[in-house]
Length: 248
Ligand code: GEK
Image (cartoon, rainbow, N blue to C red; front, side, top):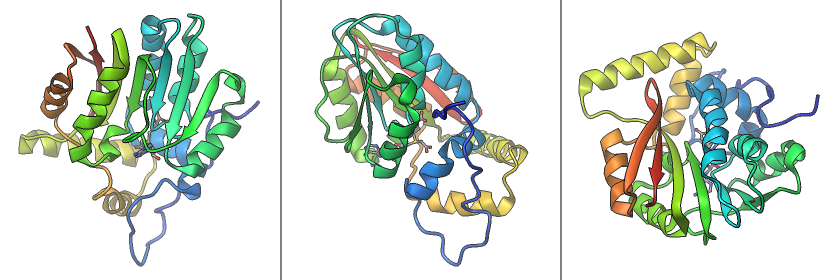
């Protein structure tokens, strides 16, 4: 069987041994090599979300437009969309600023090679072509919070009327009890996926300054501020949520 971003990878053991110093998380070669295993075992509902991105893209894709996957990692969302979108004359553009991710995505996307353009670039400054679907699947959380509105505004500007942004994020909570409950549930999920307490705590430290989650309200408000008329949640699993934001 040929490899693709949704076939199992090597097992993620990056934080299994006690590290002298836990440095900030980076999407380097080591992470790219184990990424499918890492994300399936860390993000509850990931496989369902990726599948549904294909279903939703198929509904909203329009001929003569682009379909962007911003922060594509190994291209799992792009593969799902390329398999399901049937309208003609669409360009799939998958973007990531990690050279290791882009290189590996090129190897894994052979099934849809020729239909997908892989671009190594910072999505905070990449000019966007007219698009009917833009995916930010667990990527906005890695963009500095003060740069997020500008990115969403540029996505809004690039979308054709009726176009959609499909946004998935880890959530923060204002209410302390809700935060505690969801944090404990996510911890339980990761333990059930075979991660040890040491792995979980070292990874948490590595991500502390890198992955900045926000509340669902903050996302709703910012999407409205960026111009989106309709914002609908379409998936929620523990402390992770997916929203559809449509341009009228
Ligand atoms: C999936 N969407 O499998 N510009 C471009 N890429 C970036 C930037 C940036 N400024 N910042 C971070 N990234 C994928 C999963 S992972 C989520 C997305 C996670 C990239 C980064 O290199 C990484 O590949 C991706 O965003 C985030 O559906 O690991 O939790």
